[in-house]
Amino acid sequence: MEHLQNYINGELTDPLSGMWLPNFEPATGALYSRIPASTAADIDTAAEAAARAFPGWSATPAEERSRMLLRIAELIEARLDDLAAAESKDNGKPLWLARSVDIPRAARNFRFFATAILHTSSEAHATDDTAINYTLRQPIGVAGCISPWNLPLYLFTWKIAPALAAGNTVVAKPSEITPMTAYRLSEICIEAGLPPGVLNIVHGTGADVGAAITAHPGIPAISFTGGTQTGATIARTAAPMFKKLSLELGGKNPTIIFADCDFDEMLETVLRSAFSNQGEICLCGSRIFIERALYDRFRDAFTERVRALRVGDPLDDATGQGAIVSEQHMEKVLGYVDLAREEGGNVLCGGERVQVEDRCSEGWFIAPTVIEGLPFSCRTNQEEIFGPVVTLMPFDTEDEVLTMANSTPYGLAASVWTGDVTRAHRVAAQLQSGIIWINCWMLRDLRTPFGGMKQSGVGREGGWEALRFFTEAKNVCIKL
Ligand code: NAD
Image (tube, rainbow, N blue to C red; front, side, top):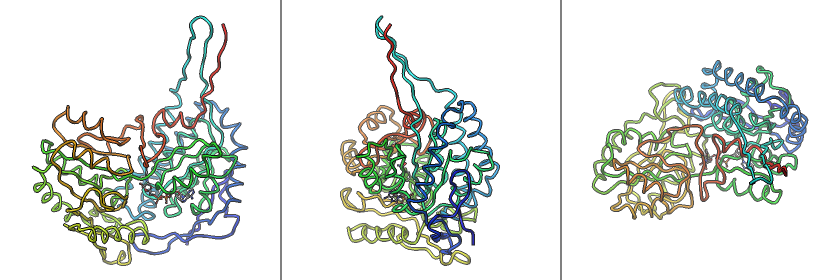
């Protein structure tokens, strides 16, 4: 059984505690590797290594930093098959999805910020004829990056790449539920020749390792993606220490379908936006609002398509829905289906655990689930489920759907389907979401601001927003 190791000061090391945590394959339910049960002592070592590496890395010319990050991107691409297999095994997602989305995007993240850093500039302000101001944007020091299990390497690198590109050194923690590709990334960094201490990857639980990163006085910036409650816990520690904080949190995203949309394209995309990655993407549209004139047609066509989604072995190319990431998460999602029934919902399809045959007979699978007949204000429609469960709700007017769409504490993403461009702009302007897609979903341009409002987060990732987060602005005023 493989034992993963921490990557600290350029070396792979065992946890100081000598303790290990189990790591399971969701598709089979089998224990297949062990990861370090690291503690605050390992974070102390990692933060010291990162602090020692900071003067050298931050003074390295941007072109050289860029070359190093491009080398890492190339190595990720060269190992596409291995990394995709590792991601699929660790998370339960279909292998084809890891191969076509997760791993290519991890390489793109490095490429994007490796090249972005060559094109940055900062501002200058001439103050009449009395002074010239210019702004330095300098790396902060050691950045802490904490990421979740749903898009493991994709989101891990989405933080690490801009932090390193901007000249910071990093102490990073992947989710303990999906540690494998982060471990492979440490092997890649060693192969690429990344100087010791520039990136440190420490494995373990949120309570031990995540909390130690958050509380460490030598880590002045924290970039976190995960659940809203965890974000609040992190903020409670980090805010009084005046750390820079970027929080990318949960969502309960509305999909709004007007009767004048292109039906076929909408149906295809809404199916994806509801169930991609088993619904375990923070951007998935889990509340589907349909203009009443289209409701019956949509419900029938959608439900038929959902029933045809194949739940199966992630290794099988024909699989549409892989395994749920953990037994605990599967129970949580099924608990929400029970709640929906108690709240008066009508389960149109799915709603139960699926037994997949052969090697996956002990795996954690759920049939994609569509529910109707629930009020927008009930718990099922207000709380994040983060699984293959969506609800359908009819609406009559634009005002009504905006009220319902904006009713949750979250504000991450929304998608709107309409053939009326004026209405599209009007609705987009009034939706309380940080990311809005019109007649599409998850069409990403890495330069755009990415993040949520309300309880979906604070701050934005992507493009210059990320580079700004990972730098400190310093104004220099020269009297003429
Ligand atoms: P989580 O909050 O349980 O864990 C996320 C990470 O935080 C993990 O590495 C975990 O070990 C760590 N952690 C846990 N407790 C901690 C603590 N007290 N201090 C510091 N770190 C701690 O989230 P999850 O279950 O891994 O991921 C699912 C959640 O992530 C969902 O709510 C989803 O919407 C959200 N998410 C948001 C985005 C986004 O961009 N907004 C993207 C993906 C996922």
